[in-house]
Image 1 (spheres, rainbow, N blue to C red):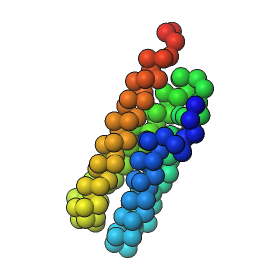
Image 2 (cartoon, rainbow, N blue to C red):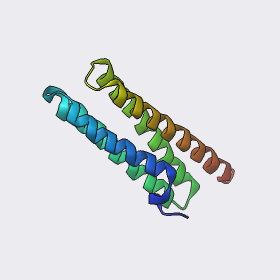
Image 3 (cartoon, one colour):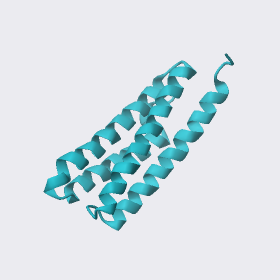
Image 4 (tube, rainbow, N blue to C red):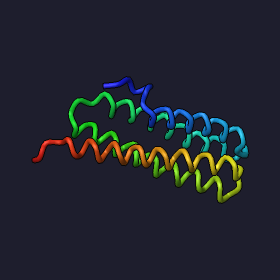
Length: 122
């Protein structure tokens, strides 16, 4: 088992967290704490779920954590869509975030499929 910090999905998640911090700086004061903090917290939670999935020995536990990653990714999409629709963030930032989230979704989906194939039949 590799260290979670060497996983490509973890690196992508780290880039998304960096982008979230940059985004928080751009947000208007009225929503900086509400939306900005939520996005940053979700990114941190997603990185934690990735690390826990990698450390899980049982396929059931790993599957649960990967599903958590995907759940957080969907919540982030909603929050960032609101920020974009309300013109709180730039088109460039939105585009970068969308690419990173799509990449995380694809990687997590593949990881989930691989883990599910290895799980013992019930």
